Amino acid sequence: MDALFVLVHSPLVGPSTWTPVAAALRALHRTAVVPSLLGVTDGPPPFWPSIADRVAGAVTDLSEGRPLVVVAHSNAGYFVPVIAEAVRRTSSVVAGCVIVDGAMPARTGPTPVVAPGLLDRLLPRVVDGRLPPWSAWWDEDPGPLFPDEETRRAVEAEQPQLPLTYYDQQVPVPAGWDRAPCGYLRFSEHYEPAAREALDRGWAVAHVPGLHLHQLVDPEPVAAQLVAMTGGW
Image (cartoon, rainbow, N blue to C red):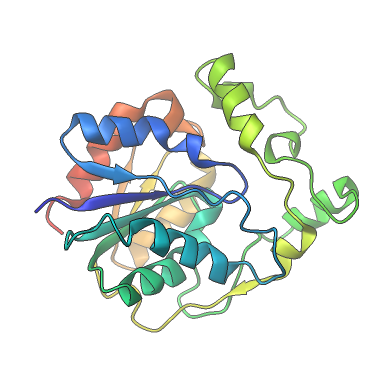
């Protein structure tokens, strides 16, 4: 039985960042689901339990004994260990995990969810305890990340304004979470150090050249690489 691909978007954006790859996987006769993490920061911190439970809940009625491959993009990489454990608690089998152009969790926890120095740069942009939408963080125009203006509008419409407390949380790293195979799929040069870290851990590593939202720009090769990377799992 082929695995169910569980495509987890970064909490900084929305599920539309994975929708084209889900469609491309289905065109390859694979099953894919994109759980929505929108609204996970509406309650009190920490938010990682809600993120893990939201993903596990989204696949409970879909797995039907099918093994799962957890695929997490960008900032969602920090949450892969707790997502994998939450999914296993639903009696689903985790065939493996892939981080795509994203953050690596610590070898042992807890893991902070912000890169060093980023928060200092963002603090002047905080209003009423909330950050601006992700695409407004950068001094340069993020337009090249998107294949067209329609896609950009759809992605930007979903972007939450995260509370600053999002970056206060420390995500646990359960022992043995990575006993199933793990992989890293890199797009951009920015995440080359993370890919090297994955290689050092013995993970499968692949590269589809592109910018950080390349899954929107060219979803078919991304889907094909995910299938190739995980086929033996």
